[in-house]
Length: 226
Ligand code: HEC
Ligand code: HEC
Ligand code: HEC
Ligand code: HEC
Ligand code: HEC
Image (cartoon, rainbow, N blue to C red):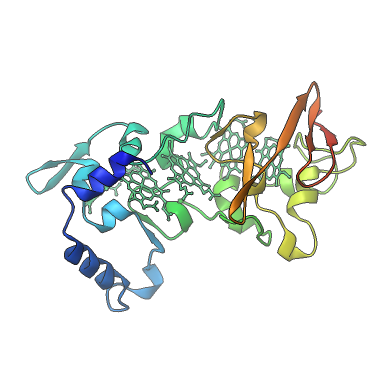
């Protein structure tokens, strides 16, 4: 959240009382059919600040005020400043994955993705990622899996090992290691991962045919990617 957000939210939007009423009405059970209830409504959309993104012609919606990601960076910190950028950003920018108005998924996502470190693994819970990436990268247990994340003996798929760990309450989300936007390390590996109220470093060293991770979760361990 940057300064512009505060400025924009403080200007041109409805007064606090109107905003509170709007929020109450949309939360009320009679406000919407329960089955269609979106879980997340984007704050400027909820506040009916359509003109924060759309050109308005009289009462009608015209085009967008700016192309993405600038449209979003009016209010949000840039998320694509890391050295390694997610290929998904090049498709439809932010709305490749986020809905600009409201969504049934957390963080306005267009499909399911667990936004917590530990989550029981089910393919449908990662529909966002598997919409573009092959789920077999995670699901196949042995090294025939088409992933570059394999143990040094070339026997095990280390994606499977980390994500499908037992017992199931310790199954790890992609979020542990990958940032969905951009990072300073290869393969969208996070520089730090969120853990409780702090952020813990992920010390990754790329090597010619793989890499290694050290310190935080285990001593330095290497892997091969070919
Ligand atoms: C945060 C920016 C933002 C806000 C606020 C916003 N919109 Fe949008 N809107 C967009 C974007 C971006 C698209 C294009 C969606 C796409 O291409 O996937 C869009 C598309 C639309 C469309 C075209 C049909 C559709 O759903 O794709 C309509 C109609 C619309 N918006 C109406 C509104 C109204 C009415 C409001 C205020 C209640 C509003 N928007 C607020 C960003 C916004
Ligand atoms: C007019 C200001 C404004 C614009 C423009 C805007 N946002 Fe937001 N956005 C907000 C506010 C306010 C919040 C809620 C504050 C928070 O959660 O930190 C928010 C929250 C979000 C969230 C988190 C939702 C959640 O459930 O936690 C996402 C994701 C997001 N915006 C994406 C976008 C994208 C993508 C665009 C461009 C299409 C965009 N925003 C444009 C103001 C804006
Ligand atoms: C590959 C899909 C993808 C694309 C493309 C994408 N995002 Fe996200 N975004 C995510 C996911 C997944 C999360 C939830 C991350 C988490 O909490 O683990 C997220 C979270 C966010 C949040 C909320 C951060 C928070 O901590 O609440 C904002 C804001 C956001 N994205 C903005 C953007 C903007 C702006 C763009 C375009 C430059 C963009 N995103 C493009 C997948 C994407
Ligand atoms: C709209 C399609 C799309 C979605 C959705 C998507 N990705 Fe990607 N992803 C790509 C593209 C395109 C690339 C770049 C080409 C490639 O490496 O396959 C990429 C690359 C990556 C890479 C880096 C590959 C490397 O070795 O450098 C990782 C890691 C990744 N994605 C993880 C994720 C995760 C986690 C999710 C879910 C939160 C996700 N992706 C959702 C399209 C997508
Ligand atoms: C324990 C850390 C860790 C977790 C958790 C993790 N990954 Fe990865 N991932 C990696 C590493 C390391 C690489 C780089 C492999 C290489 O060198 O090619 C990678 C590479 C990738 C790639 C690039 C292609 C490939 O398979 O080599 C994709 C796509 C990907 N991961 C998606 C995901 C998705 C989706 C999830 C969650 C379901 C996930 N990852 C969870 C560590 C992780």
